[in-house]
Structures are given as C-alpha cells and as structure tokens.
Image 1 (tube, rainbow, N blue to C red):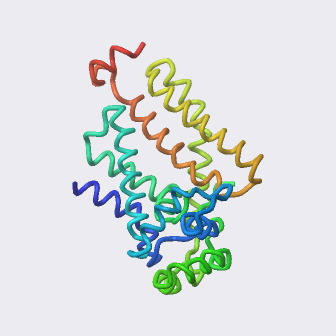
Image 2 (cartoon, rainbow, N blue to C red):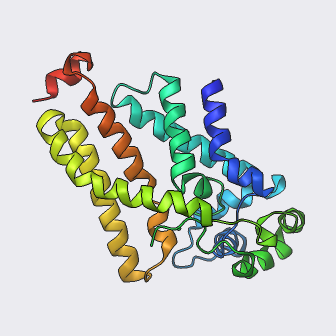
Length: 251
C-alpha cells in the first residue's frame, strides 16, 4: 500500500507543484459535451462526464483516478513478467518514468507532448478552457489563476534536455531489443513489438490527421521506456528463474 501511495505521489507531482490539475486547450471542449448534451468530433463525451463529476472537488479526483489507473496498468504489465509482486520494482519503474518521460504531466492533466513535454500548456493557449470554467466551474477557475501554469511559471527546458534524448534512445533501442528477445524470450519480444507498432501507428495517424505536434508522440513515448526496462530485465534473468508455466512456453 505504501508503494502505491508513493507511486501515485510521483505521478501527481507536476499537478501538486502546479497547485491545480494541469489544463489544456481541449479541456473545455471535453467538459462542455455532457453540459450541452452534444457530441463533437475528437471530444469524448464520456471523458467530459468524468470531468464534470470532479467539478465539486476542483477536478482533483480526476487526476487521482488517472494516477491510480496508471499505477494499476504498470503493475499488471510487470506482473506479466513476474515482477508485479515486488513493490520496490514497481516503484522504481514509476520513478524512472516520472523523471525520464512525460507520463506524470499527462496523468496530472485534464485531457484524454515531435517529443517535447509541455507542448501547448501555456496560459495563453487555455483561453477556451478558462471561459468554460468561468461559466461552469468558477471556484476551480479561481484556483487555476493561482497556479504556476496560469503564470507561465512551468518551464520545460531542463526537463526536455533529459526527456527528449531518453525518449529517442529508448525508441531507437526497441528494434534491437526485439531481435535479442525473439531468440530468448518470445513473449517479451512480442510485448516490445507491440509497443513499437503502437508508437509507429500513433505517429502515422496523428501526423496524417492532426498534423505534426510535439504532444502527440510525447504522450505515448513512456511505453518505449517501459518496454526497454522490462526487456532489459528479462534478458538479464536466467530462464530457470522464470515461473514454470512461463518458462515452459519459451523456446
């Protein structure tokens, strides 16, 4: 339980530092869907209802649930490779993803960032979300105006100096990791391949239908780092230490 709390705390660190869940230009569009009772292309009404349910608590339940679900998915993924029962391992993975990827910036954001973190979250980009808050969540708007984001006090130069090279390196390593794992741990190789295809598909779809944008690939690139960490761990672990059922399935 302590590990889960620490993991969630790490993922929520940017929002806590900001003093308010991080908003984006699209946040208002999501929130308006259940309020107006109308659908809009690219604005999930279901996620809008999720945001609407969090208004009374200034949207903090939204990012807390997002952090909890993210931790759950990470633990489930680690469990598939016999690492999920070690709280320290899960905590270490979340720590690396918090420091070396954009993951916590999306967990703490009210939204379903080439690779740079922070793309599009400047105050002058949020005029529509501010208008929606003014009409439907005035108390939350007051808190937003006190946040670091509203003052353009969130700076990403140092963050991107670390995260962009790590993201590019992790993505470049995936094909080589896939080849190594294919000969020794086929299940892990298929996991790495799936992450590779997800990154390629995301880049292609967003590039074609939305145009180039840093945030589109940044929000998915943490899976590359996770795949490299899991793949590296699997390669280092002797076959006889794998669970019997898993070892039997490996060539």
